Image (cartoon, rainbow, N blue to C red; front, side, top):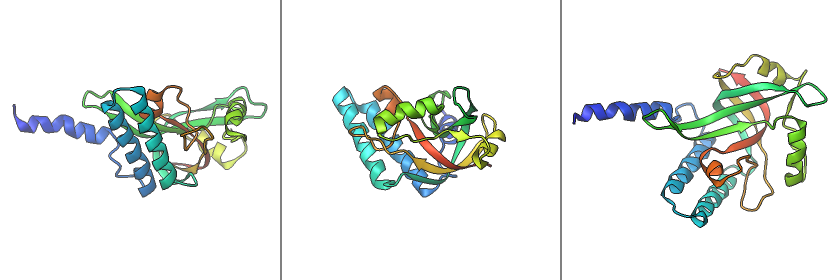
Length: 198
């Protein structure tokens, strides 16, 4: 087989997996810990190993981002919408900050950061966390105005704070229910302070 033909799918992988040319140092570190865990998970063979891989990633994230602050991370808007159940008008957003894809264009892993969907979800999270993270974005604020200008697929620069988790072994509050989800498609909750369209 012509070796030049092999370069095509590999190039596609590099382009689509978020190789990190726009990433800040902390975001690149965050993604690297994620990718390492995904690789370990793919090679592991039982639940004990899965848990060890997850706990190792969480420990690494806490050491590298002890305060949970994220500054000028780059991502793509997956969803922006209105919270219909809140007593005051508010909105939520879901931003993909990394996505790995195979040469067949299938998503193999991803990292999302998002608000909880409404005050009801915030209150439910408060039971586990011991406090209400209040991540929803209230109408009349600058952040809400910024959300109004966004569409799915827009590239954005974001700042905010990842919410620390109280669950044993965890570092930041993450919404996946299965270990597969926690490792390969984590959904971290963020209290946003800036969302800027690029």
